[in-house]
Every structure is written in C-alpha cells, then in structure tokens.
Length: 183
Image (cartoon, rainbow, N blue to C red; front, side):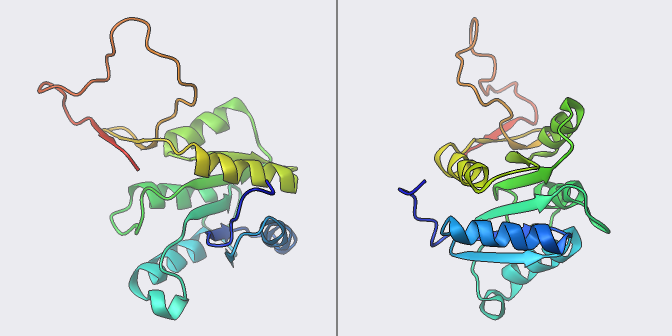
C-alpha cells in the first residue's frame, strides 16, 4: 500500500457511531486519503451529495470518488442510502463506488447488498490494512455496471471465468431492456 497515493481521493463517510467514525477518518488519513467528509447517517450523506452537485464551491469539493457507509444506522441506514445512490433520479453519480461496513456478514445480507448494487463490503472488526486493500480493489478492479429492469449496479461477478459454451450476454436486436454500461 506504500506505493499508492490516495492524496487526491475524496471519500464520503457515513457512520453514526462517533467512535467508529473517528477511527475510520483517522485510518483513511493514515492511508493518505486526501479528503474525508464524515457525516452521521445516510440522510446527512444524501444531503451532502446533493450539495456537492448543486453547490460544489460552497462544499469545497467537485465530486465524491468513493462512498463508505455503515449498514446499521438511524434514521437512514446504509442500504436505504445505497438504494438512493443507485436508483434515485436525483442521485448525482449512480456509478460512484460504494462500500458498506457491517458486522453482520451472513450470506443473506451479502446477497441483499449485492442485489442493491454495493461495490464492496468491509466486515467489522477491520484493520487499516483491510481498509487499504478494499480501496485498492475498488481502484484497480473497477467493475462494469449492468442495468436492466431488476438491477442497476456493478457486475456482481468478480471472477473472470469464460462462459461454458457460447456467450449469452451479447446484446442483439432482440435484447429487451438490457444495457451494459462501462463505468
């Protein structure tokens, strides 16, 4: 991680626990992240993103490069915030990499987050090394976005296995409502 310069990266951090928020801000600063914008919950994060879109000079930032959000917050939790970022018409950047932090790592919850369009997840407890690895993964291995009637978000497949048999994801004249977007 010493080879990476995160100095120009802008991170929006939504975390309701003052202790964890401080821990994450300090961890990101130790990693060299240039700007961290901490907020208390998803509602504040939505408001911040709207201000970045409408008043970038007042906020002091042109865009957010990565969103990191706790899943379990009140009144607006990480999943509601993620849903707004990926699906709401007023979202300023539906393609922004979005990392959820959670201590609930049951397969059902991971599937739920993937279905909502999360880019990556960070399990509690975490270390600075884990945070750095996730940032590097988001930067080095961006995934194309998929948009269809049921889903919008990063391609959920991480492994690059070739298809068994002919490729079936090719767009044709008969493709209905399927769009592959490179983010």
